[in-house]
Structures are given as C-alpha cells and as structure tokens.
Length: 43
Image (cartoon, rainbow, N blue to C red; front, top):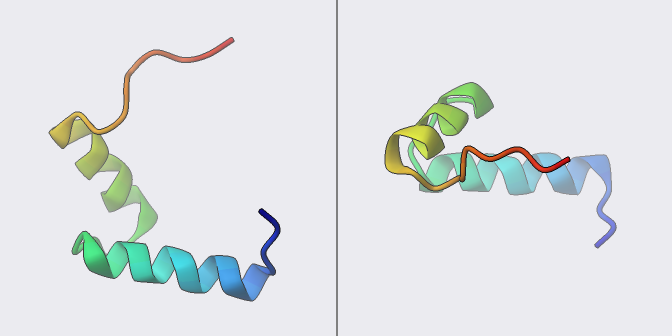
C-alpha cells in the first residue's frame, strides 16, 4: 500500500485518537501493557 506523507500522518492521528494516546511513544507503551505486540524480534 502506497500512501502520501499527508495520508500517513492522518491515518496515524486517527489511530492515536481511537486508542486515546497522545503520541506514538504512548501508543507503543500501550501495546506492551496490553500484550498487543509480541516481544520477539524477527531476524
């Protein structure tokens, strides 16, 4: 999927609003707290 910078920013903003996070760092913290992302790192 290709998206312009503006579109990507709008999509991120919409996601942050939905999860009630004020920034991407807070959103990343929420994923860890709720176990949304696996802690395994792919090689």
